[in-house]
Length: 203
Ligand code: GTP
Ligand code: MG
Image 1 (tube, rainbow, N blue to C red):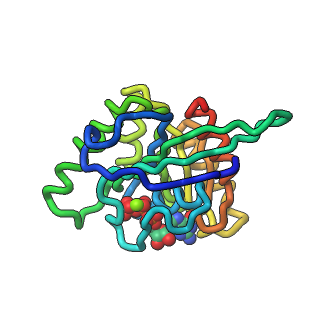
Image 2 (image 1 turned 180 degrees about the horizontal axis):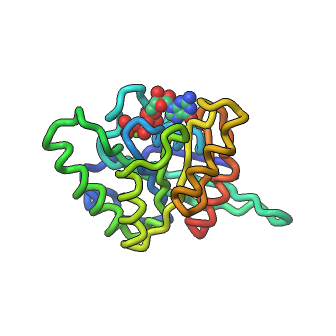
């Protein structure tokens, strides 16, 4: 994939405040500070499109980014497509205000359940921690509402090279589904993830 353009379109505190769905959309979910926003930046090759932070709770509302892609398939002319990426606030962050914590569930669940055009949800876990209870709950919820999930293990660069494949395989076994290992620091796994996303988005 060649990224022709990537830009911020809108932020919203509720699903119905987002612009009407116009293009295939993929959302990024996971624990607070796991690296959702960094992964979007890595995918679109823009270091600072999305604000990231070492302090959890960086992303507050739903953030919609629009990308223009040139997709290169073997033996074919590049095909132009538009794909929207939605960055979500993380879960499992205790320091958020009570009101914010209470609104997280309905906001995210409402979006995941009702957003027309949402083709898949990237569920991101830290490769060093694997799946935790809230990650499993999210995956179950997505299965239940029949939204395809793409499970990603990130921060591969934090493990010695010799352990990376092993840890990804462990997460795959414990999740019972495929896992794409990536690093937003080095770009490791980026091409494989893009292939999965393009397939999941049906573009
Ligand atoms: P919230 O918006 O607070 O939920 O966080 P987030 O999931 O969007 O995480 P964010 O992208 O802001 O990254 C959190 C921290 O992890 C930042 O300090 C990033 O630099 C770091 N980080 C993210 N991905 C990677 C990675 O692949 N490797 C390394 N080494 N650090 C990473
Ligand atoms: Mg974020």
